[in-house]
Length: 250
Length: 200
Image 1 (cartoon, rainbow over the protein chains, first blue to last red):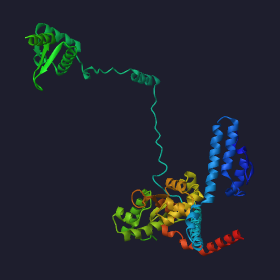
Image 2 (cartoon, chains in turn blue, red):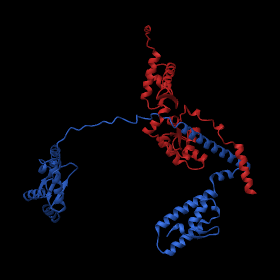
Image 3 (tube, rainbow over the protein chains, first blue to last red):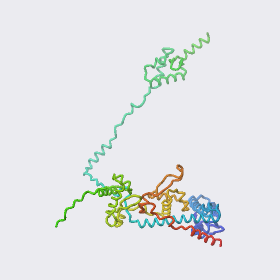
Image 4 (cartoon, rainbow over the protein chains, first blue to last red):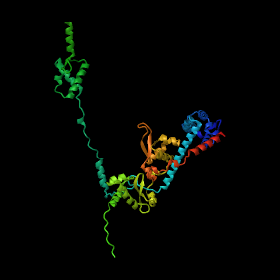
């Protein structure tokens, strides 16, 4: 669909869209008389007839119609005229004349500047650093391709891999402590946590505490601590249960 | 007969003139008398006298380099005789292809600056954004603060490069606005004529 060939049938104009545009641009048709909404309707009708969305045509139409609308809006409500409308006709004419005179003065000033530029066209001067710096001619010594290859070969060797092992934190497995605590509890019914792990590293102590919590979750042990930072006492649950049962039956 | 040998004592003013020549050669923008005096560590009055000597040596027709008073200072430029050769060496981007809109905008900034884009648009009746951008890029105008401190519209004024490109000693060399066209009475008369034609 070619937007410019869109046939229009308006009160003020009948013919293809591009002829309308030409007439408007040549000032042979007053935009104030043109029904822009009518143009939009004609376009939409054509669009529906085709039953498919022609994005290119829509884009082109949008550009043309918005330009037309802007021209019309400017023609209908010139900003200057709106300001002047608040004045009495005489004052408005005076204000308009003053503004036109101001603009004309600036136009003449621009013309003066242009003349000046032409008459001063032969003026050349330095702005910023000197435009041409002497070019440095770098002379290379004769080179042997074999040496280049040797140099590249050195570069092509992958660098030795750097070990990062010392940077990693290594944790002993939790299972190790589970086994350890279970074996302690097989020998004794209760034990003191601090005494059991006191000689281990900080990391190992942390893992030992996790193992302890795991045992507690499984219901294998019960944990007592009288106060924060007080020694942690661990006892076998079956012993505990026995004791309470004995107490209740007593 | 042999001419008697004359010994000329070193003239301090001549020495100062040499120093000024050197300063003008290394400067990339016009230097004011004050700047020359500070750099040469001498009195402004003596600098002006020395500039007279330098100007005599580098005047149009006598030398390929010409001393000129421009943009509020003193600077060397190429002689007009050498202009063609200079034009073959490099172009002049600052003044190439200045549009009519840019020219009018430049005139408004030169006469009314510092002024804002809305000021320019108000006089020309159309937005001045692209003309202002083009003039900024060419270095013919520069920003000069904002209207009403922070948040106001940016003000623009012409640069020393503008004066240099147009060969002006200062903005006061521009013709007086009153001498330019734009007689209010005449325009008012024409407006009335147009109005009468319409109503007729």
